[in-house]
Figure 1 (cartoon, helix red, strand yellow):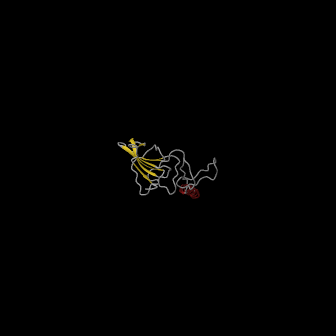
Figure 2 (figure 1 turned 135 degrees about the vertical axis):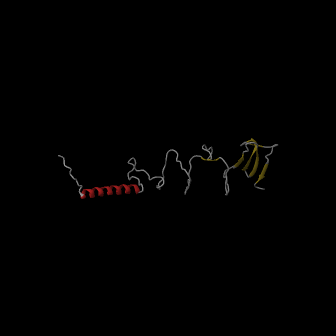
Figure 3 (figure 1 turned 90 degrees about the vertical axis):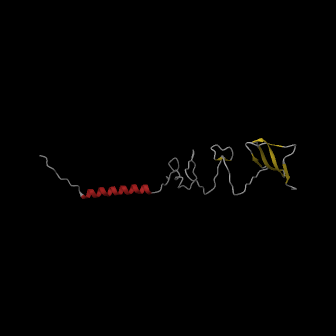
Amino acid sequence: MFQKMNKQISPKIVSLTFSVLVVCFAMAFYAYALDWTGPTQDPPGGNVSAPINAASSTQYKSGALGVEGVLRGYSNLIVDGNVGIGTAGPGAKLDVRGSLYSSGNYDINNTGPMVYFRDTDHRSAMVHVNSNIFYILRGSGVNSAGWEAYGGYWPLTINLENN
C-alpha cells in the first residue's frame, strides 16, 4: 500500500544552503575579530568613549578602579585628594607607612620649614629654619610634635647670616 519514495535534495539547494552558512560564519568572524569602535552619536544617543585600553580621550569613572599586577604611567599623575602607600586611610597629601628610600634630594619649600623626628618611645627632636636661624630643637616629650627650651635656651641654633 505504501511505497517508499526516494527523495533527493537538489544540488542547487545544498549549494545555496552551504553558501548562506559560509557567509553567516564569515560575518560573525569579521564582527568578532574587529576592534571595538564607539558609536557616532552624542549622548544620550549612546556615544561613549572607547575602552580604557584603546582610548586617547580623557575618561572618568565613578567608584574604584582595581588593577592587578603592575600599574605604569607614562605621563603626570594628578591626585586631588590624599595618597596612601601602605595605608588605606591616608592622613596627609602623601602618607607612607613603612620605610622610604630616595636616591635624590628632598626640597622643603616653606616660610618656616620644619622636619619632625618623632620617636615613639623616647624624646622627639625637630630641625627648623626661620628668620635666618637654623634650629635643632628638643621635643617636649615622647612622640611629640611640640618643642621646648632646656634651661631657657634652644639646644642648638646657628645664625645663617654670620655663621
